[in-house]
Image (tube, rainbow, N blue to C red):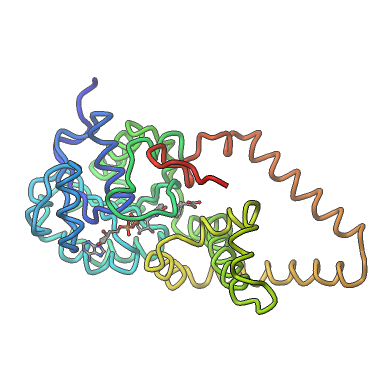
Length: 313
Ligand SMILES: NC(=O)C1=CN([C@@H]2O[C@H](COP(=O)(O)OP(=O)(O)OC[C@H]3O[C@@H](n4cnc5c(N)ncnc54)[C@H](O)[C@@H]3O)[C@@H](O)[C@H]2O)C=CC1
Ligand SMILES: O=C(O)C(=O)Cc1ccc(O)cc1
């Protein structure tokens, strides 16, 4: 196996993403050692029991002498955690995160920065609806995009740090791209955040409908609705933070979505089959383009944890 990219990494937040980084770093030899900290004592105990790495009882002990620190906490907790982590870090090392909203993450890291640490926000475009240390698995990031949103610092040291972090994620199997923060948040608003909002909403609507027996919703939910319930099972704290911190981009998409939905509503009301055919045919073409681009060939890990039995219908 090639030399580790980092001799020691620290992971703050030992949930799905933190545990997956820990497992992948060990499996693919990307880090010499892995140290974790979580504010929840039960999570720390579990992380020790399942052997994710060394688990410390303080944040400071975890980050001491780490050459890269990964913040794997909900987006709303990033500012506080970053402010506590930076003073305990060694000069010249890297602070990154995995938050789903990069505007908020970049602001949190920048506010905590003291000029000694390389701040490189990041986002793995891979995950599942599960959370907690047991949900993590080593292959989560394989063939998935990892987006880095580096600052405009063009110093040789900073560029070398970005290069090293890129190598780390590539060692975990990810395809790394750099992107502007605002663009990231606009793209993810439509490709990830709005779909989650729609899933939360459709599941709530189905359960609130007085005309539908809840037992029947469960009994007949083998098709499309079942896919929505998987996404709607995602962690409420994480998703509350996503919507509160990517407010503008999500509201913009939601406005467009509502207009398009109203147009479909009108077509159904007036029996405009041509319009429905046009829209559904276009959607099918887009799906085909995604498959042809290799984005849904089974390589992307959304909701696919090889350690968990698939749902039986
Ligand atoms: N779940 C997913 O599919 C994906 C999540 N993300 C991002 O990854 C981050 C983590 O998400 P998950 O791993 O899914 O969540 P999780 O809920 O599985 O784990 C988060 C962990 O952070 C800990 N934590 C919270 N506040 C903390 C604090 N102040 N100090 C120390 N530990 C703290 C919690 O106790 C928990 O164990 C979020 O920012 C999310 O936006 C990114 C890509 C995919
Ligand atoms: O499980 C799914 O379908 C996902 O969409 C996972 C996911 C959730 C949040 C992210 O920021 C990235 C990926």
